[in-house]
Image (cartoon, rainbow, N blue to C red):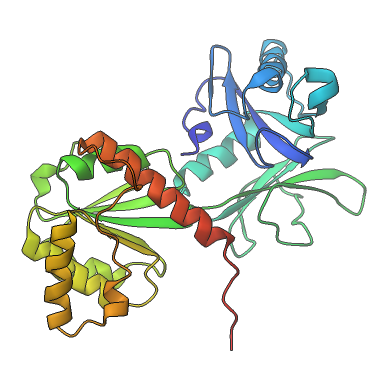
Length: 331
């Protein structure tokens, strides 16, 4: 997730898709970081990416300090079948840009808005959700409108700026269980647009290091984390104990605004849990929201890595549907 933030020590150029017109490989705001001998992330591959890497490395060779901004018609000039037009911004990672990227690495779970000059003297600053400057150059304007995707805008003097939202992942997963399947799911979610709370009673079950988007929670009272979870979170229950699984299921079904809830197990396990929860007075319509078995229908292999790939796909389908759904109307 956001690999372009991973390496800024060596001389590098940050390449941002600043504008898209028509069909293109990636959306506005997509980034990659180019160094002399490598790259982090991708703006979509193909001839466009090759040209972008060549331009970035040419800037590194010449030690050019100025930002470059170029237009690429994908069909006529690059022979790519998507045929749209893409504008790319090339920023040497030095001075304010380096400061902003360092701050962004510390703010991966918070919304930030980066504003950088496209022309003239290099200027770059980072703003928080309240519009306060976190770091960077002085004299960088806030755009007149809050955008949720990369946008170019001109200030009163006619100077052009790139407004570049770097938003925290909107999807959060509470994963209960640090066994083989839980560990495989953590690996599968490592580079997806989400954050993960990985929860188990057994502290020694967790590996020494986890992906950047994962927080380990070793606790004897995992049900309390259900109560503290953000609205709309997703839940995966797969602990070492059926009794604990059931307690967690009941806690999840008792709270409001559950985005998605999956329980590992067979159809037989589901029937047993449904019967027990109904006997405890949980409404059938609530029990019906529980997904068990988990995973994309049609995938039956029980290997941990296969289950993890299937569940990751199921979560992505769910999150994209939730993102596309209209916002609820307030009374």
